[in-house]
Each structure stands twice: as C-alpha cells, then as structure tokens.
Image (cartoon, rainbow, N blue to C red; front, top):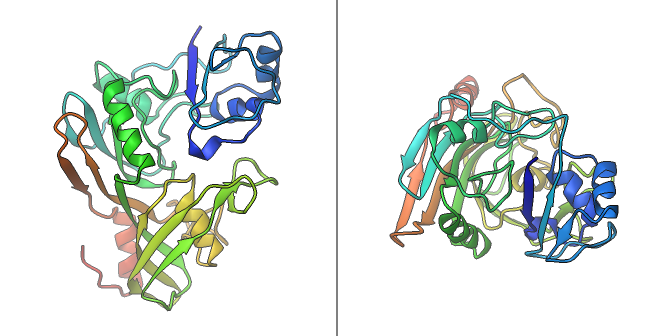
Length: 304
C-alpha cells in the first residue's frame, strides 16, 4: 500500500482538494472523495473536506490500495545520460516517453528507468514521481534534471521558483512569424472546459512569460529559439497557440497534425546551480533528427 505525499506548487493553487488529487494521482475523483470523507487524507496535519482549496506549499499525505496501477518497478530501459553525480542526473529524454507512471502509462517511464539505474532518488514529489524535479511532456524531447536526494531536489526546486534555472527550447511553429523576437506575457491557468488542458486566462491563473527569437523562416512555418522565464504546465504550447502560431504537429493545442512524429519541441539547453558545489552548470543537446529532417525538407540551412 503506497503512501502518497504531495506538495502543492504554483501551478496547482486555488483548486479544490479532490480535483487536485484526482489530477495528480492515479485515483478517480470519486475514489479521492471517499478517502477524504473517511478521514484518510491529511492536509498540513489536519483532516480537510473535499471542497478545501489548495494553497502554495500545502502538504497532503494519504495511503491507499490501488488495484488498477501496480507498484512502480525498476525497468532496464536505456537512458541517454548527459551528466551524473552523487546528487543528480541529467538526461536527454526521447519523445514518446512519459516522465512518471499514471493510469494508462503504468510502466516504461523515465521513473521506471531511473529506479533501475539509481540506488536512491528523492521522494519530495511522492511515490509515483521519485527524483522528478520538473517535467516535460511525453511528446517533447530534451533535457531533464532529476534528484537523487531530497536536499538536491529542494535546492533545484527553489531555482525553478526564483527563476535562476534557465531552460531553452527549439520549437518549429505553424505560420511565418514576422518579428525577429518577442515576449509573450500572458497568465496561464487550467481550462474550465477541459481540466487536462491549460489556457491563457485571467481566472485562477499564474504569471507566464515566454521569450522567443526567430532562427529561420520557411514558407509556412518558423524555427524558434524559445526561453522560459516561468515554468507553467504546457507553457510554450499554450503561448504559441495564443499568438496563433501553435507548435507544429501539436495534437492538443495545434490546428492539425502533419505526421506521427509528435510535436516539434525540444528542450536543448538547461542551466542551474549545483546543489552541492554551488557552481553553475550548463548543458546542451542537439536537435533530434526528425526536426532536422523537417528543416532540410523546407530548404532550411540552420546549423546548431
């Protein structure tokens, strides 16, 4: 019977407790409500009601027996390791790979691979997300830093909050962007129509800032260098949709998909201060081949 411990981050404040837990665990909302009604969920040391609204840094703890999702297990899945030491591991995640287990993806995830490769991982983010400091979408490739202990995890998390962790992406978006560079400053919150999606909204939203610079233009698309100044869920995809230049091949926020390769979004640069040495570390990985092939097919000449 796994013990679940979750800490509320900036993206999940002011949400009903039962909704938050249903979105962040493998359990249904009905199952969560039953646990709360039975007094089996503890919020900041107290037993809450299901209508309680989440606040930043709330700590929620409960245990349950889940019959549809088995205990996570180590799996011998190859990892593209960019850097590793006693405190952390930086990997280059391939597209089509989920970061942590959930219903529909019980195994074959980054977490399963990490459990096989590492002796210890942080448990700050709960049973199903050991070591996971931040996430990137299943169909997004690129750099991901994971923590091997709670001290490293908390130190890295603080950098994400105070914006001293820098992340840059290659994105190919639909349409031709005329401005050579720009800033998108538009708050992001959960869609009221579909809780699995995010949107630009003034209601229950958080500040979201994305910078972009044009690297190359094609006849019907644009290659961008994108930098995140904040780290909201699906931020680049939502912001690009907001300015009517959705990420190419984005089946959720885009206009249409052109093939089965997944969205054209790659986290190529990651910079943070090491939790033990306190030195800044910069990492960079090359653009995936399917994006390079698209650029070549458009007559592009961009060279990393």
